[in-house]
Image (tube, rainbow, N blue to C red; front, side, top):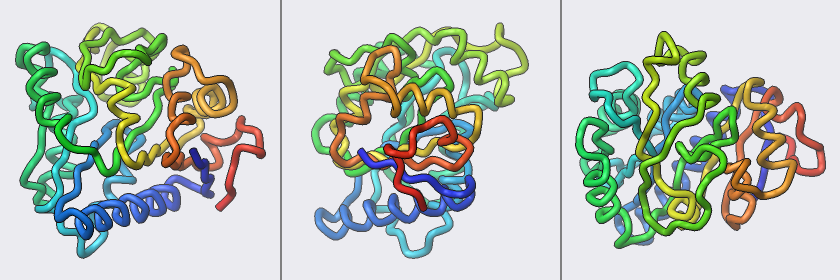
Length: 250
């Protein structure tokens, strides 16, 4: 795992987008297609905007998989990650082959159906972030580091649910679903490359917990330290509590 720190969110997002585009182009050149995993949330907005503005990417050759989704909200809800990906990635690029997690459908069946599409071939690059509680996807602490299931039904803890309110996706904690569908930790780690985008001061404690301490299910994002081809993109605000020995300054 490599950590890079940038002056601000804008420069972080551009650098991460350039690396993501390089990974996509490499896969298309080598295999004719690229398989990606896309993350959502406030931390990914500028990164996806930068990525979708890069010219010359052959998006119709990209197959996209969905990282996580709330159970029990429609695709029209402002917090729906299906809505987020349709508006910020799929419709902007013309991706033709994508697998969204339907939060309205039976969650067990959704896990099976999308998992069946995911596992036959490797994922070339996964885009992820970490939450204020250190979660990876919606794998809140203590995360399951053992299951090989591609997708899980998970319970969301109060820190995670409160973050969604603070970010403006919901108006109150009572509106935030208590369960979600999430890609499993082990499935994420099967990706050939992982790009982890973590800006903003409110993530500084989680960054320290995940990348400055021990690998632990209580800091789910810490598992990325075991992946040989992960780059963590931080800005100075999110990196402010991290010891300099872990950082490649940019």
